[in-house]
Length: 424
Image (cartoon, rainbow, N blue to C red; front, side):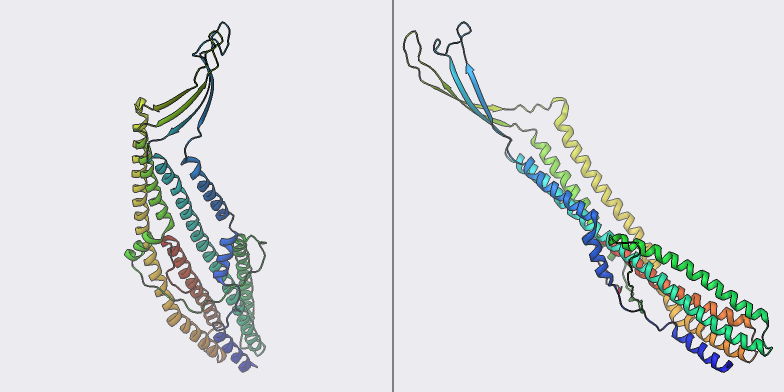
């Protein structure tokens, strides 16, 4: 019986790390669905439509003015046929901004749609980051639960071995109680992990706009493909691809266009007018009078009262400086962040290698050796329990490191705005 239990335990030890989860929801499909369903992206698209519809409102001529008048009506009779100066007047006037002003306004308004496009792209990247990290959180908790359950099975088999030895008086009752206590502790760990699994599942489901308890399958991470990248390369990628940075540059360009529009206010606007006057026959003389036509040209006088136009130009220049410094500040932040993230990635990569090729096989061999030695009473029971606990901790921590590495990649992909070709 003892030898049989020993063989079962040995098989369990080497099977823990080799059983994969069934394939389920693909991460890319979860990201795609989350982006498609995102209320914020729909809101930003509506905002872009608002900005688009505003272009024609601001970049067209003002409506013409229709004028109706009774000109030079005598106050003693109010008759139209008494004085030759009297007439019924109809007129039309149209104001024309200084050439180039409307096109400048159109350009300033149109760039808003491009800025909002970058807001949409940045939100897409943020959703990708958040869904990816939530997915790997869920993935880790499920795998940790799996390792905990396998550890519990192993403890159960150890309990069987201890019980057999106890019956033949080669183990103490304290050994039996100790292994039962370890099983209780692992059960508590499982419940704690299940609670965190539900929390992670709820977060992921919130992006999919579905019930918090809707099941989402995750795939086991067998191997992580590492990346090699420098801070300078990440800076360049961010400058080229990051929507947030593109948005700042577009905002700076809008400020330049705003300056162009403001400078147009130093030039006059023109108003063209046409008046047609209908005159009646003079009653006293019987004279027929010709109708009259009047043409007019009005020119506004941009005298810049109180420096109001100058202040518009200065405001636009200040906005350009603001966005220029905002861009520099963002790049400064990214440079520091990239340096620390690369160091963290390197550290995690080295620890993964240490766990996979050093600690894990050593822990497996240690438990196997402890069990064999315990069979022949060469080591104390506590050595077996310690070896089992070490194996559980190493397997769990190794998987946590793998998910941490992929989550770190997700952060870098958000900050650079592009894929870094790491295995998910």
